[in-house]
Length: 271
Image (tube, rainbow, N blue to C red):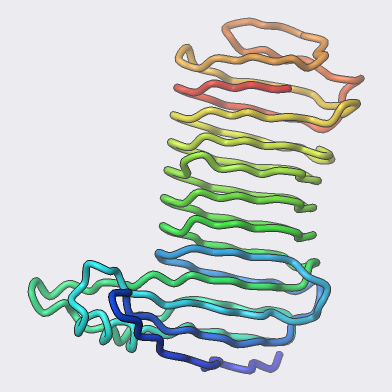
């Protein structure tokens, strides 16, 4: 498979009085539907949107912290780049901090914020590694594999299997989801609105709350494993098999895909 290599794109340095020093990276590469988009973010923000073009359009604002010394901030921003590696079936995007200088006082390396706005083909698989970057993801049809730390994630209008591992995710949400979910959450409150659950799904949560809604008429088989420090509430028309040891199980609308929920120090609400 032919590799296109690192893309340099367009960098525009912006210096505004009283503002953090920043520069803009802009680049567009081709990606056919059914391909894979990989994004690795370490501090900043993400707005990732699906569209009906066979292209990935990337705009990133690289921005220093306002508290930094202005001379040092300029050096950090100037040394930070965005690497884009593309091939016929995939695009990979990541910040590159290899040339960022130390701070000169304690010899520490610091990283600026990178704020991404990305448009990609609607039908792609997403592989996302997001750290300290609140993110909005909208309008995709394909597999989503998401690792998130210290980031609030808002996902809307997605169709496909979703696998999420999230820690300290604040109030994160997955709305108008079609497909299946496999979630491992810690210290995170989750809102999950399923327009259609069509395959086995699993949710594991510790020290957080889940508010999950299912479409009227959805069939499923529910199994739970809840600690004594977890609570469960449901307004669904469940035909209960048992409610032993605070672990309710049952079927809804004649049964269907299995939904397994495991929780500790959490509140679970199904509606």
